[in-house]
Length: 205
Image (tube, rainbow, N blue to C red; front, side):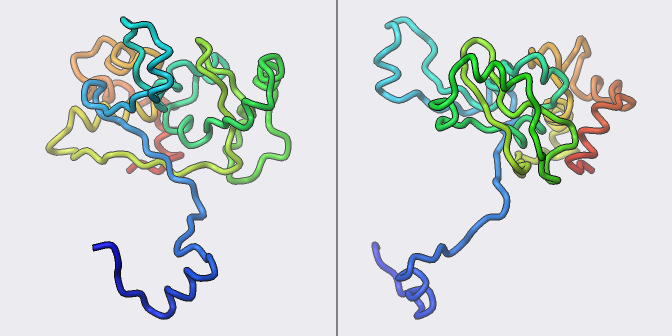
């Protein structure tokens, strides 16, 4: 079927080009599954054709990949805040030279809106390893994640909490940090002010 019955109201709205829905908040999905369970998006055919025949770099950089190569001045920023606060801006990249971006990365926002965190994070950041640049949003985006069952998936639940709210660079090493399980590491971090602050910021209960 390629047709359906419309009400007179919907037909009138569509005919004048009024959107049927609108969002006041940007929503960002953060994949907090184990690395082996995450889905990756292939690069375009053009990009794949530019690679060497034996290259394994066939996937696009995801949000988690960009978090790994965030600049050193965002070392204490957790993944949840990074996802909520920064976005890739191709338009900005086209109009901003490498030297300008490097200069901007040392600057803070002027006239930051109330919706943005009180910390004056850089307006534009240059990611490591030549991955690109990201721009700070005017307002925090709402993050969405898979909700793991505390009772049935306890290890995955604690892993996801550490992944979202504890700053890290090397995922497996930092999130386990020498402990036998993510739950053990989380229990050891219960008194960590940074972890508690981040969880409270995003209202984790």
